[in-house]
Amino acid sequence: MTTKSNPSAPRAQSNEQTDREPWTVRSVLQWTTDFFEKHDLESARLDAEVLLAHVLEQNRLSLYLHYEDKVPAASLQVYRGLIRRRVNREPIAYITGVREFYSIPLAVDPSVLIPRPETEHLVEYVVEHGQDHADSADKGPLKILEIGTGSGNLCIALAENLAGARIVSLDISAAALSVAMKNRRGHPGCSERIHLLQGDLLGALHPERARFHLIVSNPPYVAAESWDDLSPEVRDYEPRGALDGGRLGTEILERILKDGADYLLPEGALVLEIGEDQAETLQAVAQETGRYRRSWVLEDYAGKPRVLVAVV
Ligand code: GLN
Image (cartoon, rainbow, N blue to C red; front, top):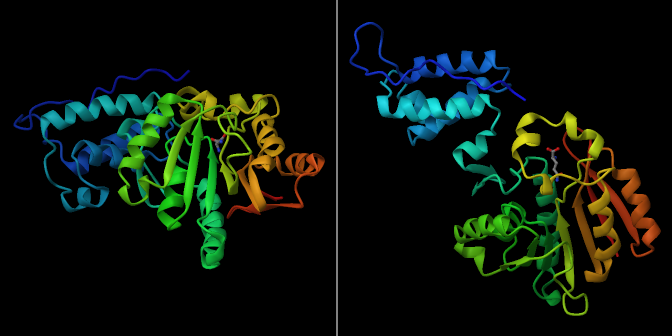
């Protein structure tokens, strides 16, 4: 466990004091960057900027436009509390309560996984693929099922970028669904096209009544043996239920592969985010089910296999 730290400065002293210069945006950022570096935080400067911008209710750019401005004592006091949370390894997104995904700002709290940039690959693929569907008008609206909605990042990014798509999003966690609901409300254009439902994987739906062109998911896929390798930010703060994929990490993905085919329309596809060392196992599972004609893997910018596509 990380040592609890008690930053002694920048203290919330009066800016009128004479024994030292008043705290300015510049000096606060400098002090905090040094402090975070001493605590081995990787993006010390960025974290300092994001937290100060949050407290001052500005964006990061405007910090630089007000670089020599004094930071009010009341803001310093709030800021010190946030610094303490960050050195205790709380993720920035939980401290500020927001994270951007696919250029969409989303509310997050510790009941949901913080959306990751790697999941944007999945969105890119589905948006491209879904566009083809929309272009062939005779097929009717594109129907997408999402398993494990979390903050709603996937379903909202897809609804925003695929006009007319209808999405059913499932999550087992009521707390996560209320975050997703809040985020959905912020996107009136797509809110009536996303249906949020509580359920354990596919259990809430009947395959005879619900069939989809696409099933998408970023399910839990961290293997038990990798648990200790996770950063404290992830391991100690993010919801275990959104990460823990059982002994090998592939337990939930395997269940989705086995049951998912029943919920797909002819020529429908599963599009799943996977761990970087799981492609081979999961393609073998897809084949064993005898339900998929073909499966392939999409690589991320670093060349790692991160998305599995399986077509019925
Ligand atoms: N990529 C995430 C991590 O390792 C795991 C996400 C998941 O299990 N769906 O931090």
